Amino acid sequence: ELSRIVQNENIRTYSLHPGIISTNLNHMNNRYTTYFINLLIMMFEISAEQGAINTLYPVLSPENKETGEYYNEGIKQEPNKIANDQEVANKLWKVSEQLLREHGLI
Image (cartoon, rainbow, N blue to C red; front, side, top):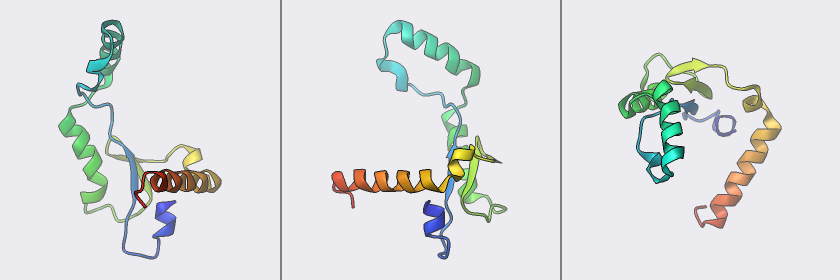
């Protein structure tokens, strides 16, 4: 939705999934939960540095001139079809604005 709103300005927007990043965010879970989560994470995890690269790539890549693209682990991909549903985008935008207003951020 943001990409559509700012389409006539010199602003580029991107959405992305940086990947499953190895962090200590699950340290507050109980032992059994943490053990199983860590087993799953270890199968797919990437370093925090690689996650940062995946996040910055769309913005800093000289070959990327398009706006509104989706990147998964630094690779341009087609998003889930719901991401292109204008009705869903409008609802999400309105809810986001409402939450920001409720917290005094806009």
